[in-house]
Amino acid sequence: MIALRRHAVLTALIVLAVVMLVPFAIVLINAVKTPAEYSSGGPLALPESIHLDALRTFWERVDFGRKLWNSALIAGTVAFLAVVLSVLNAYAFGIGRVKGSTWILAVFLLANTLPQEQLVYPLYYGAKWLGLYDTRLSVIIIMTVIQAAFGTYLLSAVFGTFPRSLLEAAELDGAGRWRILWRVVVPISRPTLTVLMIFFFIWTWNEFFLPLVFLISNDNQTVPVALATTAGDKYMDATMQSAASLLGVLPAIVFFLLFQRTLTRGITVGAIK
Image (tube, rainbow, N blue to C red):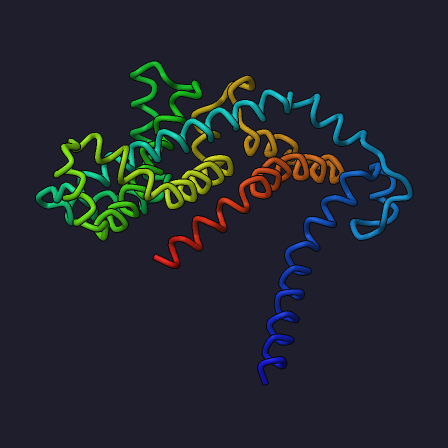
């Protein structure tokens, strides 16, 4: 019976893996075709030989290297700042026992669940007024606040269950609040903070709507915005679209593979706790 269940689970995982990999395989084989091969054989036919013209043309047309740098700079800065801000807020709400923290956290969660279409109007005029419109700093500030709202809500629940005896022992040793935070709370919570930082990076990297509104110049645009420039109203190059999709998804896959072990370790530690 146990062996039968294992086979059923394994079969389900294989089917799920195939379903997830098929779209990626279609994008890959069409990214290395010529437009003529695509027109004659369709999207499912294998290429007769590997052509990198679509990849090279897309890279040069949108200055993809600059887009990669912009996305990495914005996503990396937001992930770091949002985690730091979340830790400071959660330390006050979860361990400091701020009065009315439940209602404040409810406002944080509500702000995080609002559609971005409702936020974009005041944010647009705010950025114009501050002279930050069409700068990467505007997106970094906005995304940091949005991600930190979720991080504060999540970490407050984690810090609320922090062992009080450990904090009291640190206080007896003469540690102040600031030292307790950075020498006791942060090191013990490092797996959770690492997972949070990885998710913040990926969520910000994939963000499309806010960078589309706030980064209108070509030099400041990010990877998801650059992908949208390959499709027009009356014209679409399928091989170019496939090349753009491939180049757009590869950095996220590489980042996930690099931090897969860290992500798994962090989730496992959280489950054990």
